[in-house]
Every structure is written in structure tokens, then in C-alpha cells.
Image (cartoon, rainbow, N blue to C red; front, side, top):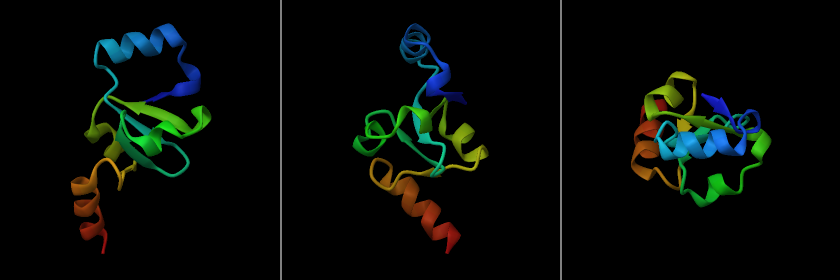
Length: 81
């Protein structure tokens, strides 16, 4: 997991280009989603974290985004009820 505020622009672009970053999350809300998510794009840089894959996000205690990952969110929600 990488914090957005701790990465320089060149580092971030390199990680994106090399597909080391595939998901982003909100550190305060503990929600992760796709990089293209409109909700995620509105997130403050100080709250944004990046993940290599879903397994890493889940292992860190994050849940799927209800907007960009509807099926994964529904599965998560059904499992928590």
C-alpha cells in the first residue's frame, strides 16, 4: 500500500505505467475501488492510498466501493449481514 501524499508525481506515473497500482482507497473510510471511479477521483489526496490488487486492500481491512465495484460490494455486504 502506498499513500498518495508520499509519492512524487514521477513515482506515481511510473507505478501506474508498470501496473503496480490498480486500485485506490480512502484511508479514513476504509473503502477501495477502481482508479476510474468518480467517487474516488473526488477524494482528498491526504486520504488516498493505492493498492496492487484487491487482495491487498481486503487484507488491510478495506471494503469494495458501492459505485464502481457493485458486485464485489454486494457480495461483501451480504457476507456482513
